[in-house]
Length: 526
Image (cartoon, rainbow, N blue to C red):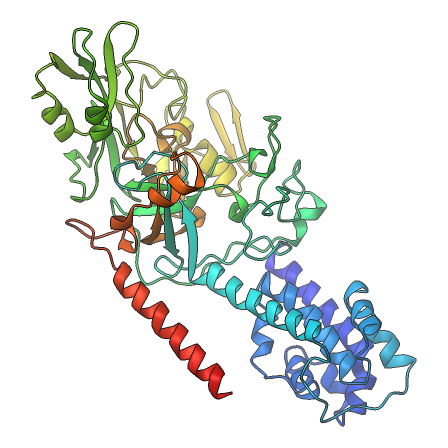
């Protein structure tokens, strides 16, 4: 829905609230009109149910408000003597309309000084869990989100099995566009494996998607810098596989429910990017990566049929890859420094970087046009759009900007021969509405990244990884082996910065121990 449509919906909710509660306001010593004034009526209601006024803020936070509304329905009923378990269930399962019965049919007086303590251990447990979920949802959505590295696209920089804390506030937290969803779950419900949100999977403009909010973002305090590691929503995600459907059929996913990816922003808005023989060039200059970055490529290692030791393979390939091929050649994923080191091995005859020659057309590579004979190893140059910048539109440029105009910036784009029409008007140029980024993996030839799908819009940016809080080797067999395979040297290390990462595990242990001791002493005093 648009902002205007949401405002109309908000006014309808106010009318429903007024009609269902005005008599209760009067019983509580308030004026009937106070139930009709938007926002103010919520503040007055907090006074009636003896709850803090700041709860009103929670009513306007997406996802959190789905938990808050049932709480307010229950609290309203209890403030007028309807505190049985049946009343609680009726308040929830009628979506609050049970209050109409309390308002018009019953004559129970207002209980001004009612006890706010739950009547049973079960009620206390449910209350505690509800507010724990609300607090966790706020942190998860607007401040810090846990994330795991599922693939090797940033291998040797970030490893498979690294568990990250991703900051939402560095680049600005994105307000959820999906308003009806399970709290803290991304696109899949744990254990159940089913979809965690309500939407129309086949039609973007379907009725179930009308509840979506327009894109909004809380301002951040930092812009994305070139070569930052960034978590973002995969722009081309249209797969059902994330909730157990292996059919391969396409589906519609809202921006905030698309699969999260983590890559390096090798190019930022306004840059011109090119890949030459595997190396990235920005604005004509070879890019200089942070010293912690370890870009790698496949190398052809000729040992004339002799076997490399397992220790040597493990030294250069953490996942144990690197078996000899049928022709007696190894293909190892190495950094340039590792390739230089491997050349010194006495049984190694040659180490050659495996690259696709310049001028080779790969149809899987953006912009997927025969006009551009590009591959993952030799690519570009191409311009990365910046908000406010204008580009010419013609048969040569439209392959680069077609999905930006149509999908990311929601225009009606039609192409008739050499003529291009945007929203029914012939267009020879286009001005971009937002910034775009070029996200690539350090594992240059083993990464599904921007070379496949193109630009990443800023509205798809999720956050900035700031810390590895846990790391272990997921390929270790058996639970006991997994415990032994914890990478202690990576625990509580920062993701950014330079030099060898420093572990702050000892500080984390001290803080946890201190908090545990404080909680124990506080509980003992009570």
